[in-house]
Image 1 (cartoon, rainbow, N blue to C red):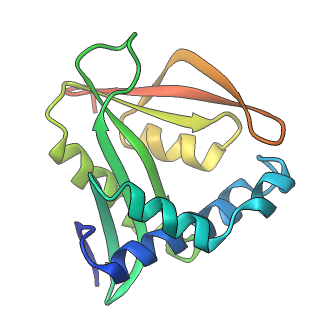
Image 2 (cartoon, rainbow, N blue to C red):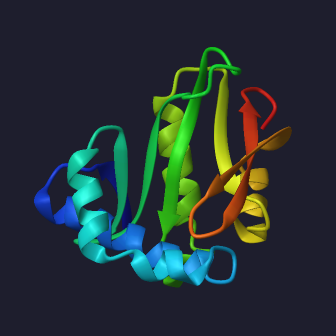
Image 3 (spheres, rainbow, N blue to C red):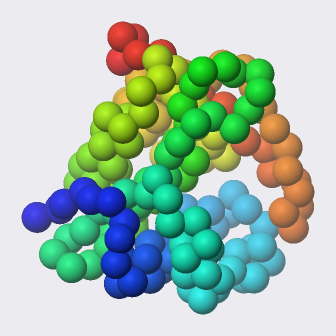
Length: 163
């Protein structure tokens, strides 16, 4: 049985770090330059989890962390009074089992804003379909970042009442 809860314990923080690492390897191979993925490590992702433990929910299958979501106030100045889902990752073996949706619904329940944004890697068709099923729609905004090579993210926004 999957439970969704606030990330609190050392085991949960380490589990979140592992999911962060593993989900990047599973979801971004072929979408992100392989040298960027090769530079990631479980240790680096666990370190990140310890540095930013706030506003994080984990999905657990028994005692094992199998997914997480990070959320909060929107970081972009051009979209006022909005929330944001900063990251949502689920291990591939849990795709299609409702874990991502349970995490998203839990985060949305904690965000009071009428609009919620999420950034998604352009070309990540699985993630884009997932966000669309959750009611998010592209608002035409994009941003290009340089990892090992340029990547472009698109912004999708959920307007409450339009799910």
